[in-house]
Image 1 (cartoon, helix red, strand yellow):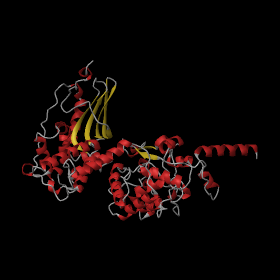
Image 2 (spheres, helix red, strand yellow; image 1 turned 90 degrees about the vertical axis):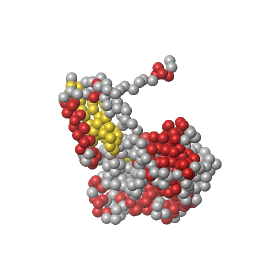
Image 3 (cartoon, one colour; image 1 turned 60 degrees about the vertical axis):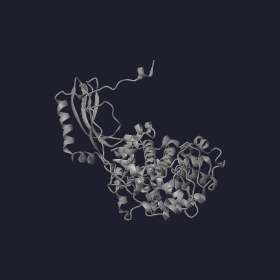
Image 4 (cartoon, helix red, strand yellow; image 1 turned 180 degrees about the vertical axis):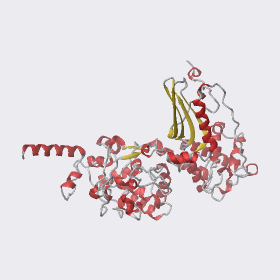
Amino acid sequence: MGLSDKVKPVEVIAPNWTTLMAPAAGVIHKVDLPPRNGRKRSLAIEVESNNRGFRIRARDYSRDRSIVCQSLGINCPRDITSKEDALAFLKQYPEKFMTFQGILEGMQDGYWMGELRADHVNRPKVSKTYPFGTLGYALRWHIQQALGSENQKDTYGDQAFKLLGMRSKSGEVFGHVECSDLDEDIAMQMTEAWVAEGRSYSTLRGIYALLSAALSRASKKPKSSGVRPGIYWGVQDSKGRGNPINTERKQIDIIIDDINAGEDVRAQPFTPPEAEALCKVFLRNDYLKPYFPLFAILLATGARPNEVLALRWDHVLGLWEGHQLGYHVPRAKEFVLTGDPVLFELAVSKKHRLHLEPERRFKRVKNGTEHQPELNTFIPGFENLFKKAIEALLPRNTACMANQEWRKRLVFQGPAAGDDFRLPYDWHNFRRYFMRACAEAGVRYRRPYNLRHTYVSMMCRIGEYSQRQIAYWIGDNETTMKNHYSGVLSFPQQDKVKKVAGVDDLVKNLSSSEKQKLAMELIASLSSGD
């Protein structure tokens, strides 16, 4: 059987309607219709999870083709994260909402889009005009030349023009930027705009490779291409690439490597002097200072990044009376942000981070293992790292701590957080700032996940805690610890006994199984009258 025998032709249905659809980030409006032949029918407006586009999804389970959808041709802004706000935004475009109403009336009259056989309308591509000497003109010039990879042009050409159609923070279209004015800040804004649309880094990397090739070739023929290297262009490499786009491409390569690496790459912890240097850089540099709390919590607790980004105020136990979860207990008279003052119970769901329903954005921690870590106090000059981070994030007026809804807010959301206080920060954005911090501190760059490995390393080598104790604190098991740190760390064989002030502290340091065993022994002892 050949390859052609496996390929199924695309089934053509009504104009603008398709059976192919991306995952939804939430349903913002839904109407249930009377059943047909005993089968359910409904019509809904949804927001797509990848590009935040509004679409209509029609369901009629009495039909052969039971689900079809149609795009409304408009995207939901990234700062809108509630169903009500999304629907209110869509209603600002009456013609879009009337499209939904018209389809609803048609379905009520028995009309079903999925049974039509009309061909889709072949829409011509929109050709944008870019002035001579701009980034858009350079790309169009390059695509028309015989030189260069035709496969690269075919694969990433359309995507590159989509990127150039986006806007910078100042409102300027990227394709209209003069090539001589191109610098690393503009390239960084291009990345941020692309990622904000929910698009992939791998595609962006291919776009940057195409744009870099276009600028390199075009700069050698300035009369026809209009491209002249600017003062912010760097030294050319062996392939003649010295433009800011190529510099940004290298940063994207690092991010992609980090993403593909996952959590199972060999641990490369930072040394205490390196950790100290990074702490100083994050506090000294105004550009990096807003991200110091995230960096500090990661290093002080050893928690996974998606756990730190899901941390709520009610889980910072040291803020609440009796060192308890802050659901209903009053705030503590004196905050205790030392020892083990935080509980990690939730993690950010990568798939549903932008879901319109806040509860869907989170999941249980890995392996379902809640953990309450002993804080890392072994960084010279930064022994109270966690305390510094929490105090930097706490509001000046702590009266809001009595509010139950405030307690559900996320501890860290980044400096550009909006009005949705349960919207998790995008972890991949932190990598860029961490790269810069490593460069300024003179520290060899390793992916930020190594902050977790640094916690383990310091608690083992300096704190002299056992593998079992550290595994419990970071929500892992001893088998996983052996796989990660075999050949990297040598753990003490015996648990380190902490000095405890009383029974409460003694019980607090026991594992779940040890607590259960102790409870059973106490019950047996009371029953026997001992």
